[in-house]
Image 1 (tube, rainbow, N blue to C red):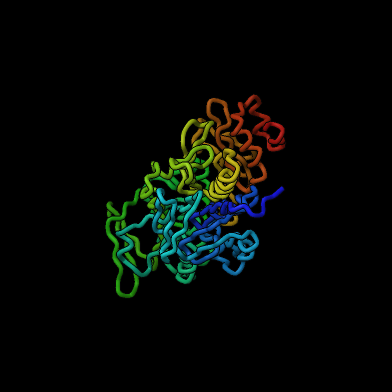
Image 2: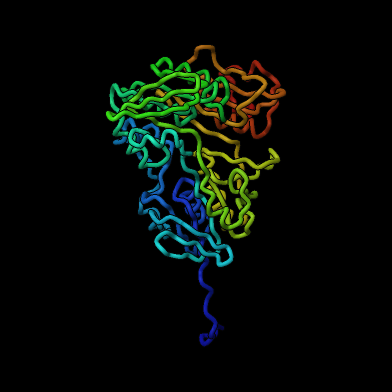
Length: 415
């Protein structure tokens, strides 16, 4: 029998706060509700926009903005899931003793658990930034919208940085009629995180479309005339003249809140198998998180759409259930000139075994290390990526090279 005169009051529902209105943050709040959390969820994002995907920014948002749909969920989704949103109100302080998050607006949110999905921002290039007008980075929706209006047929575009973003922007620039030169400090493109065969294929593809590559080029001087013409000079005397510059030289991690809170930070916020930081009530996910990979026996930080989506989902669920995250084989893709390149696992290998005839439009390369499948690359052949990732995860040893190289062999059976 219930005592209706009891003076006890029911416990207040728990409050979970997610800092970061990007892919990982959006995935996390959705996963929390799916896992059965009925308490209060607050999603905080410094940008005024609804959470959006970044991959379209360097492609559809530039070339065909009318068909681009980067927004992850409509506003109605957050209303239906009872997500309390604070977009355009950046988090500026984190007090772990008081379990309180302070926002720029002056609001203070007391929480029971908190997820840091703060991501990263474009690494600045002071030598170029001092030029002001005509210099662009591409990290946010506003960046993409700002850049789009400066590219048109005949424009001379200097792309500084030959990574994924730089090459995707170069391809978009060509599609929009610009004349593109890619300037890279290293002696190869995509020096971080791409297998050599992929670099060779992309370089040939870009060259065929008219992109000019300048490698081993360290910029030491940058000037801009009154009429907007920009000149870049390298340490070995090369000069490049353009109408606009787009640079992508890596990112800076948004770890200020974590550092101020005394969390363990080493090339990202260090987290365990549940996404928990060195503080038991604070978690991290996405670009900013350095997660434990049991199979590798080490921590690893990834900057990919797939990692943000999967890790955000896993950590959001773990905050509710306590279950470890399902760690997946690292994987990413890039679309350039209508061709799809996908990479999984290790980007270095003893050899790359080809599935498909030389010169074929679509093909797969398997990276073998000591006879074990450790990496994979597909070109316009993404249907093979799922079994390839399974083979990498299982550390499948190659018993029949001829069968593996034959595109008629069903990889699902080998996996």
